[in-house]
Image 1: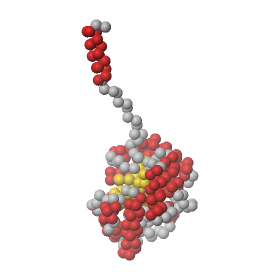
Image 2 (image 1 turned 60 degrees about the vertical axis):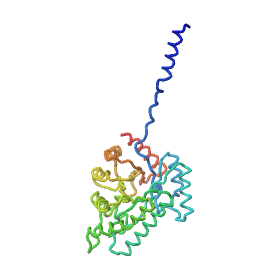
Image 3 (image 1 turned 90 degrees about the vertical axis):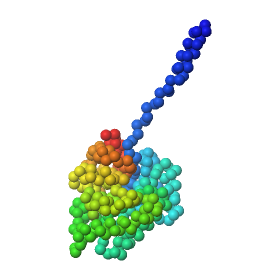
Image 4 (image 1 turned 135 degrees about the vertical axis):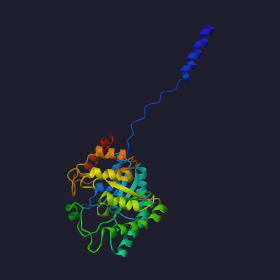
Length: 305
């Protein structure tokens, strides 16, 4: 090789080395993280399924988070709370919500204070477990005592005699405001759900949300709690949603069934620029082990659009 050929070959080799290495195409990423509500395994009608079992199943199904139903917990002792937190961590699962039951719709100030105290207590429980949000209810008039009967009436119940809807909203707003300082102190968002009562309509839910100017009050959009014209109503709620619970009904619903189009629902969430979790609430009569698996597969497929 002569001198000229040597330098030409060296220059070509150097140019080849300087070319940028092609970047592999990124793997497809699901647009939303999925959660699994422990309620999916216990509908109040059978022996409780341990929260640890739900965490194990979430890990097996590669679901990112677990939404804990407060009434399903075995204890409130700190040792139990830390056991759940550790069990989730070592299984690569986040604890994402604590779904509690309370009602602020009562003319009795002492009764409302009892529910405020319960909410403050649950904020503390969530804080100890490292959970960033709790599910909050507005409450309902309770003029229909039986939940089964309420569901038979499509969630509609009469206002308490002698009072107005405005009374109910005032009680609820005042009660939530008394919980905000603790929520801010603990870093736990109060996610108000469209869960019967005052929040059974988008207008009722948004009335409460708009009345309270706090970053610690959010909205939980439950896809299965608008029984008529659900998509129009979900479109109204999605722009302010901070958490989503997605109901499915394999085997027929415990109280009712909705034939929900989740491709359409995920499109509503995309249009609203929603970025949070979507937690499955399986409410069918099919055994949870198969019903949950079917539901998760369906939701993952629907996410693709």
